[in-house]
Image (tube, rainbow, N blue to C red; front, top):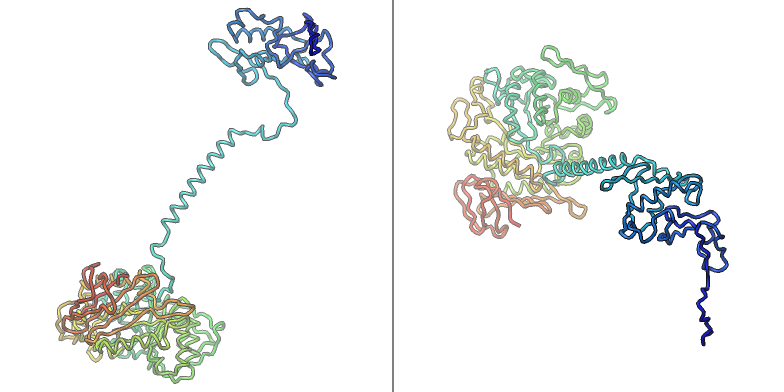
Length: 631
């Protein structure tokens, strides 16, 4: 021993008697069941392997079996993995019953598993794996375990295909949905309105429209033949003047004899139903004038409730419409309304009520009429009725009607016109939740004042029409040859087809019409563009906007000190502001309007989108210019 008391002899501290019979071949390396506790003989308090027992340390795969090639041979020196594989195959045939076999089953391939010089080639059971020019067999016959999850045995190949298919289909579906949503997006984001609010109506006297039988009188069939003209114009509906039998047809059109029949000059009920069907097919509505005065001098009582009033069946016999009245219904006008509703009429203008404003049954009848007509059809009265009754009754009437017809005499001064417009917009018809819409008319077959409007020149008629299309509410464009009352049938029958708008300022001596009041064909395109601009611009077709839970008018009517200039300004929040400037005089006018506007673009009445400034604004006689004001 040295100074550190460490033995100096070369006697080994631990000796292991390795028998020659110890199986050292890595191809047969395995554990015995008794060796689960410990495999390392160097640890204390652990049993060592009994003598004469075959023991292969899995951590030392370089311990070779005597059946395998010994170190120093050519195969191991040259690191030949195929030689090791062949040795393993030979060893598996001789290890039956030894420690390299478990439960009588040969565990093949263990030599190559622990041999660092061998590349491993695993495959399915009995699968031949080619390598170069040799074939290697890998036998991994391992018993199935009960702890293997069930999803291991699923058909994952089919699952992968289905998942890929559904993924691609989902991507395509999402892309198609996005494209369709973009395609279906509205071109404009304007507030919704009822079909008649802000739209344009076209008033027609049927006898003054083209006829189909060349008898000199317009009729329902001739009107049906010109439906393309109406759709091109851009109007939403047609107001049809009296179609009922007259004592002196067609001159005394207001003096009717029935509310159920149609004048023979115009056609029959079959023609009427066909006309309504054609209108609806072309997205046109039909509003029928009912001139009840002087046919009725007082209103009938409402004898039944709305629930008790049943519909009246229609029977068409040889062009005539027969109505079977309900035994409890005695109100003639309610019966007439129900009959024409079944024909398809979309609204009614009850004319002559202004002559019955003192009738105590006025308000009950109006309520009953609106209940029968419904919300999707319109009920219209004249503004003269509201002016004749007291204000409380007028306010109650406007809650049960949809439109109020107001006539504007454009031959008055612009100061009077502006005053009239502002009064109506701030009176009982002030825009609000319960207020009726205004129908503005500058002409009409039933107005005596229309004769004045026909004294305008051709450009004056166009200027007045464009001005009316700038007003809030529902403008009404009148189509007719003029007031022919008092003329003979022979003179009336020779009236020029009003579909042919004449531009020459000459008087027709046969019918007494001033042809200069008609609009020429070139101006029809101007009216069509104005109607289109109105439809797409909330500033023009809407009559109010909401401000702090309160509705306010969006229209301002002004006149210039010149006396012939009328200015209408229309606006809406977060929309463009439009202004129309009308000159109803006979001379050119140059003026400074910078107090109101600075600049803008011409939309109607000049070169489209032309930039203008208002420091020296010039406008010709009998002309209306619509301008989009710059923000």
